Image (tube, rainbow over the protein chains, first blue to last red):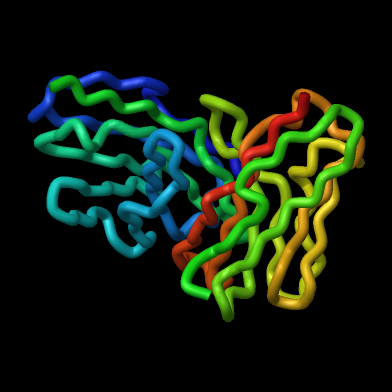
Length: 111
Length: 114
């Protein structure tokens, strides 16, 4: 099955700084790479995703980059704001479309 | 429906009792997932239904856990003889079933076993 690891597990940044979270996966059949954000007490929600035929995708302050050769993809948040504070999960589906979530990264943005 | 609906939203039960959690996916979604999330922890995969295929039950932690789905609609997750370690949020999600399609989560069922 798919092994998914996220680094770091916690990340604290000052408001306005950038944050980068990396997701490493094992199943080379993965061709879809989503990131989910879960605010405290809320459900996870998709914030950005990328498909294997694209190396980078950007949506305002967030971006995702993919390195299929090395089997990792990263979430980049620029100009961080307090409302970016949450837990972020990656969930590459692998060959079966069964989403296995990473262990999560707790991002704290200090005002 | 407009979104994934789960019930009950909160359940407190005594150790040893059985509980049933219900999930109503988005209409037309063929894929349905159950996850467990303990306080402060990640999302633990439990079971995955895709259309009429046999469900992937590889994440169910013990034989006290079972789930069923009626066609491509409602699913129930049953926990028999509940234990305190079963206390968690149980999240249901659904998607159109095509690889790479967004999955949408329900609000979750908060289970507390006392």
